[in-house]
Image (cartoon, rainbow, N blue to C red; front, side, top):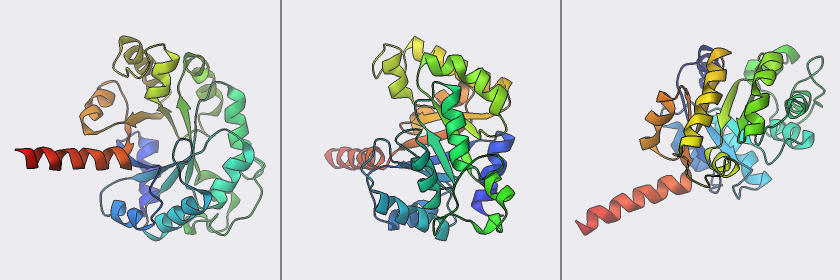
Length: 254
């Protein structure tokens, strides 16, 4: 079973999933390094990172060669950004700042072929071997994640999952943007944030759909696990590199 098929199985079964984040290092060899570890996928951050279209395409191509699923957080829910990113080889899309059902409908139309959507056919890396030239298999093999970052998103989440549960692979929380929207800026441990996360995860667990959050580092995984999450989208390569440097320097000082 490929890593991609295993990722789909884990998400459907709501088993724990571990991913890591790339937003600034475009060297394709980093995918080969990451693939040596038991990550279920890598997330390329095109919303906040500095990756170019060309570097993202190279990273996604390397993901295919290394059998490591590649998920992309796009800058916004715009049809051509969704379709083009899939054409470059993305196995899934994260839609940031979801606050309306129309955003989800836009994403579905842009990433699914007819009759489930209106995606155009193209892109050298668009198809996976698992798709076997089948429109139906292609549609089932592209993962859609919606990101909750506000009270507005939380309020519409039951409707989204009630209507489009079969199209949404999982729900993710952007804790820092959410903390700003909840008026506890960058305090992701506040009572408001804890309540918000708990409500999002509760809705997802009631609807039997995978959910999780961006996680700065290993120390926060238990927090999101205890709140009911099963997807752990771990810190950026820069923060993880900085953490390693810090440990090295502290050891040197000792």
